[in-house]
Image (cartoon, rainbow, N blue to C red):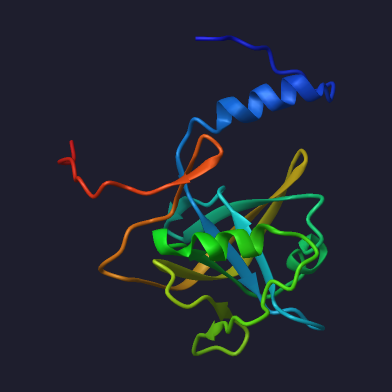
Length: 176
């Protein structure tokens, strides 16, 4: 097993090695969506979604400071986390790209509230109001208070590991 010291000096080789090490943690893939005052809705692919608290119900995700939607996302009153199904790799790729027509040919499914945008066929959705934002170095950490959530009883998550998408084999292990 290779060891590497992480430096904040901006060394590209050290950053690449750190990113490679982080990629050894398998994550699900989600798309953050939110209405935008002017223009199409916000849509950002993240692999940094996590639960924070059950009471109150809080979640978190982080967004790269270079993301062009960050200024708009930082000021919205609501946003949604859409957990992607393994059949939605194309959706993940669509919302991971900068400077593209992310919504072209795709319709967002609105919830009962007009100020939330939900993606069709998501494995789970969490409609949130902003709770807090924190400095996370080259990212901004968003904590959202979940106001409503839903999930499908069938389906498997889109998984990201080692810099690539993966699917689960369907085998279930008993919980400890």
